[in-house]
Length: 473
Image (tube, rainbow, N blue to C red; front, side):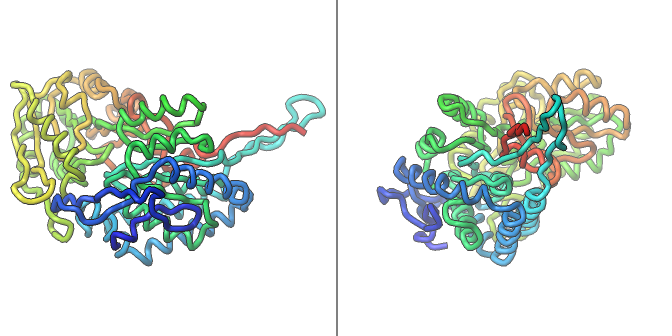
């Protein structure tokens, strides 16, 4: 994509910001500017919201079959233009191109196709007479204009997770991608415009002030965001003024419980990959590994040796296990956590910035941490994993639940009863057993506590974009 290709998409047209202002886009693999994107202001946000509002009535009146056809065609377009999509995503994120094409793009296409089918299977209750002479029916209807704000770690995937269910349910969308990674969302809107009426899907690029204007716009009836806890708190406060519905997928800080009977070879191999995939910039990344004290030292030695073989690399490096941090601010945040590590914490592997251009950091393992340490309580969102010992099941669960976030967790054991006890006791929205990190379109992805409210994916994610109407005849 050339610089001129990165434009807002409003009412079916590609347009610059009304002010002409732009933001530089930085290639994380080099630290150098590679393009610009519009810096949208209130005028641009208003135009996008008005376009979405104008398009809502007709789009909401389309049949589920018509919406299905549009989503399927968008999925086909993404597959046909896989190389262009990869170029856009990789330019902004620096992630390995081969991993994006092999892992992320097929999953993105699958989400679109799942919601294409789900659009035709909205649940409802059968008509019944709950009082004599009156028949009650429940309708599920679209909400209206949905404001969606997406992050920089998986720019295209998070955009599709939001857009697909909203459109399937008959809503219209104004999407604001991250200010550092808008390119794939802009391209998605352009491809989708071939299959959607003007105004159904709009994209406005910009910074936090752009997002604030979008959340505050009176035409917006639902605000969906994937981002940090701080962002979610700010958006919730702003949305409260107009009683907008909220859908928040916020931070994670996933615990991994490894019991003494676990298959250590399998756990080490899986977690070495799953903890550091996408440079650890994943809300479900296996970042807090809790290990039975009897096998702690053995696990730590094996895990550290395996992690030491991981290699960060540039997008075109076919042997790279992960790419750079997405931006300079995130690299600085990771460095700050490590530099503020208390004296009892020990970096047993990695720990340094890679000596090359860009925002690369070594895969890092930290041991000796305690539950109230900053690096345990805060989401690192980088290639850093902590390892803590536990004495028994009760302590393992207490440590796992002892953080504000509650998105995901995993438990590793050969004991079925122990696994089931853990899945009941862990206060998270997702629990994996003897694996970690796998998502499927058919199952919900959401958390509790500071990890937010509402679910992406699954029929639950579709229902979040509907409202219920009781009709009595």
